Structures are given as C-alpha cells and as structure tokens.
Length: 241
Image (cartoon, rainbow, N blue to C red; front, side, top):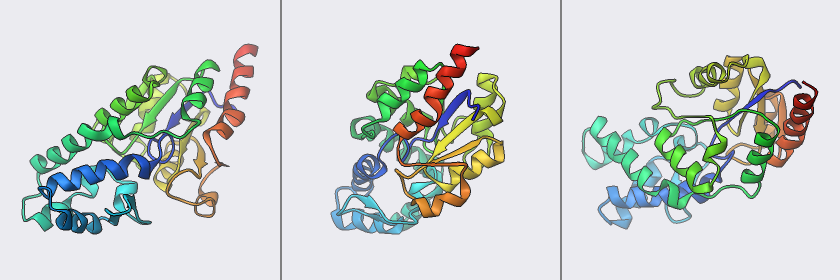
C-alpha cells in the first residue's frame, strides 16, 4: 500500500467520543436549560443523548453531524428561533469546554508521532468546528504534527462530501489515491470513497467491525495497528527514496 499522507477523522478516531463529548454536552445542555436538570435531560433525549449516563445512544445525530445538523430540535423545544445566533451560541458553548474535556485514546499521541517521524504529512477533517479541533489538538500536545486542520465551517463542506479530503490533497500536493483517510464512521468511509482515497476504518468509535467491514479497504482495531500498516512501511519507502 503506497500511502504518502494520512488524514484523520477526530471523534471516535483520535479521541474517545463519549468520554470527551458526553461531558461537553452536559455543560451545553445545562446552559441551554438554565440549570434545570429535567429540561437538560429532555433536550438530550431529543438527540439520543442520555444525560444521566453521559453518553450518546446508537443512531444519535451528534455522532456524525455538525452542530447545525443536530441542534434544531433544541431550539424548537425551547421555543426560540433556530438561526445563526442560536447556532453561534451552541458552538461557543462547545468551544468553551472542548479542550478541558478532551480525552484521547491511549495510543493517539504515540501513533501520530510515529507517523510524523516516518515523514508522512498528517491532517484532520472533522464535522465539528475547526476552532474546537485546533483547541483539542493543542491541549493534547499534538497540534504541531498536523499540517492541515479543517471543520465543517472551514469552507470545504462536510463529510461525506469529499471537499475536506480534496482540500488536504491539494494542501499536500499528493494524489488522493496515495492518501489514507482514517475514521470510525460511514461518513468517513463514504467521503474517502468519494475522494478516491484509501479507506481505513477503526473500530474505536460508534460502529462495530461488522458495520464497517463492507465499506473500507482496511479494518483496524486501533491507531497502533495503523502505524504497523502505514507508518513503518512509509518510513521504509521514504528511506529508499
């Protein structure tokens, strides 16, 4: 596999979704509910988020969509207009807590460093906001390893459309077929297919191996497996070049 660059999804791929966003969402919902626990719980239920257990249920729109794709039911329930001002409020609340609550997988930092040491350009494409992604990577101490970080609000669109992925290919000057898109969702795999990239699925997020296996070129259990698949081979190819 001739991979020369790696583009990562964020949630469920680099960071543990529920350990990170469960806590963030509790803060967001409690703020929207003005401290009313019953109302915060009701708001969570609208998007399949269980406030008490601090976790998203299967099929929650939060798992794969940007804030614009899941927050309208909150506005409707609160009796306010769903507009740019409301969405800005949601995004500001998320940003307020995104870095403090971020929880990476145990092998995230070591895997990113290994790939960077192998000479591979590394990017991140998320359906969250660019600002929250940058804040979290900075808090984890790995931002400097990324040459490209985009969110749904960065001007490249959102997954499963391929705009973010094409943006990374253009940024690196590397043809899409030589770039691995690593993610945990069908949005990630479909975006990779739409862009002509190598589809690498990890089972650390919302979907099971059974749900992912027919939609990817490689199915991995961890980022450490990615290093074994891509990093060491890429390092060898780089040395030969």
